[in-house]
Length: 150
Image (cartoon, rainbow, N blue to C red):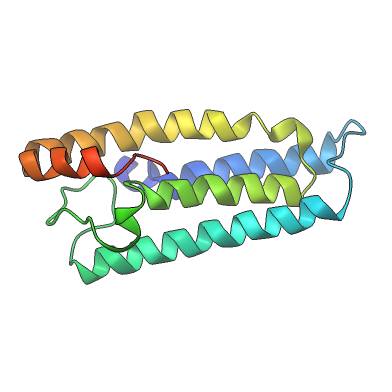
């Protein structure tokens, strides 16, 4: 049961709830100042969702799991994975940043690097270690040509 609770969307939801609560109840008079934040926030959140959808599509096409704690059946290096080794997690961060901007949650900006740190430690590093053990040379070549984030 814990493995189904300890998944990135739960961590993203927790960060989003914290940001929303901060924006609604503790704004402290701070603001990003205007419509640019709504536009940028919408573009970032929308871009994050697109990244996630492209990644899920590619993983399904390659017939491998999207569940972080499971072993991958195939090393996916095509599609959006040719640009980033972690497009779903990158998408999560973009959604978080975008909604922080949209909600005018200025004091919640530190949640973005904190979220990145948690995701990297709990999911990215263990996943990469599993891929490294299973796909050895192929994964090493993939890491040489594709960055972890961008």
